[in-house]
Amino acid sequence: MTVPKVLIADKMSPKAAEIFRQRGVEVDEKPGLSKDELIAIIADYDGLAVRSATKPDADIMAAAEKLKVIGRAGIGVDNVDIPAASARGIVVMNTPFGNSITTAEHAIALLFALARQLPEADASTQAGKWEKSRFMGVEVTGKTLGLIGAGNIGSIVASRALGLRMKVAAFDPFLTEERARDLGIEKVDLDTLLKRADFITLHTPLTDQTRNILSRENLEKTKKGVRIVNCARGGLIDEAALKDLLDSGHVAGAALDVFTQEPAKESPLFGTPGFVATPHLGASTTEAQVNVAIQVAEQMADYLLTGAVTNALNTPSVSAEEAPKLKPYMALAEKLGLLAGQLVEEGVTRVTVEAEGALAELGLKPVTSAVLAGLMKPVSDSVNMVNAPVIARDRGIDIAEVRHEKEGDYHTLLRVTVETGAGTRSVAGTLFGDNNPRLVELFGIGMEADLSGTMLYVENEDKPGFIGAVGSTLGKAGVNIGTFNLGRRGNGGEAVMLVSVDENISEPLLWEICRLDGVRDVKALRF
Ligand SMILES: NC(=O)c1ccc[n+]([C@@H]2O[C@H](COP(=O)([O-])OP(=O)(O)OC[C@H]3O[C@@H](n4cnc5c(N)ncnc54)[C@H](O)[C@@H]3O)[C@@H](O)[C@H]2O)c1
Ligand SMILES: O=C(O)CC[C@@H](O)C(=O)O
Image 1 (tube, protein in one colour):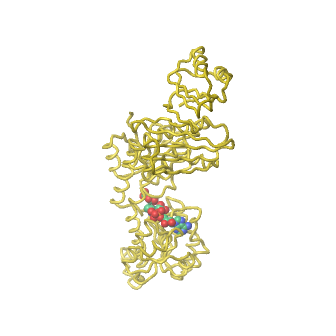
Image 2: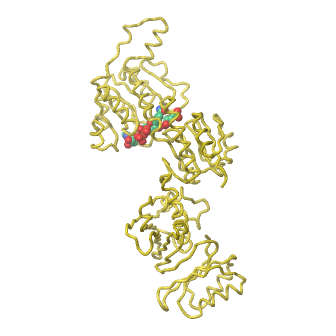
Image 3: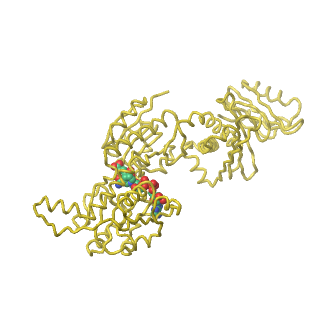
């Protein structure tokens, strides 16, 4: 096995490089590369670790021939083109909890900075002005904090605000009444929040639904004298409207850690009374940076070395404990998918993945991804486990997963059923000795086969002399037989054979077999 190689492309705690080396992953640290410089070297790397400065886009990924994983040491992945990564089979992971406390603390720090005008008071005092009467503040105790987004960071902010004896009203469409009760906060709609809040803090990702959530219209609906904090993402607030409302005195204060354009080297907001700015410092504490560096390096090393997937945004998670157990099933799943994909002739409309026995106790999502990757391999060169579910969905293929806790004839079984306009066909396999994938059922006919190399598939009427005829046709063509695997639905009924051969099967040879008496279908398969 070759040693995987990772590039750390942004400034990161040295802990990340230390962990990669300890885990046996080669690592280069090159923060501050331009896009062109990154494109020039990225082909060498299996992993790319970034914060927010590097923006892995489709151009960078097109040059990244070996890249398997992009790790974001942080939460927001808006700097990574996830669809482009998925299309190339690159796993994108983040570290969703490593900097949450730190960012929540920054939001609280900004809340106090606004309540007591700390930056302006500091500048004035250090300028020798001693303007005691200019800086009249407000207490936060008893005030209402309007929380937009009550996920990881929002709920930490809520708990800190409750500790400060604030009341917390949250707008988050995914917040349940039960969770709100557990957090000790009130779930409200956005208009109620805007009307009631003395302070507003934003903790949502930037999406089509949240972009401009504090639009001019919504800012105008806020309570006069409101103070606003944004430690989440630029783009959530209309910055021009915020400037106007600060100027008019409707908004008493606003603190932004994040901006629509970053780095924000200039802004109409700069210098506005009541405005406080920090340069995207939400996650910038020693503790948080060590946390995210350790997490991203561990997760990327796990994936590159063992296949374990944690906190991926474009592929299902596989724990380090499950990864070795799932590995042989993934091989079985891909082979069964590949078999089904080569045997169906019409567009697939539905795929059902059924697990029986031991497999039913494991996570099925990665197994389904492997089935789909195998299924679509005959029609796509670039399909893999990461992009297969996306491609399948884009093609309108309906996917179902079924678990049967009860063991059947085998201690573990994977069945793949494929529906097309021409009907439904299913194949099933098991693991021999816990490790060796074997086909055990083909279109409902019991048959054992090791799916590997080149194989001849023949569907025929069960009649005497047929097997000999196939054998001698292959022999005459100089094709050596490895194994002969047979199955039939009953004496004289439908029969199938899978013959592994040492040479390629030419088109004329296929035609010759096709012309044998009783043949219904013939195919050359590759595994
Ligand atoms: N300033 C920084 O340095 C910094 C640091 C860390 C995280 N962040 C940003 O903070 C944000 C929140 O992080 P998190 O870890 O709490 O994320 P999270 O996913 O745990 O929480 C986000 C919450 O937003 C809610 N949400 C989604 N759409 C919404 C909508 N239309 N209206 C209201 N709520 C909506 C979700 O339901 C979820 O509860 C992310 O954008 C992240 O990038 C910034
Ligand atoms: O890396 C950083 O400094 C910012 C991280 C932050 O924006 C995040 O989304 O985690």
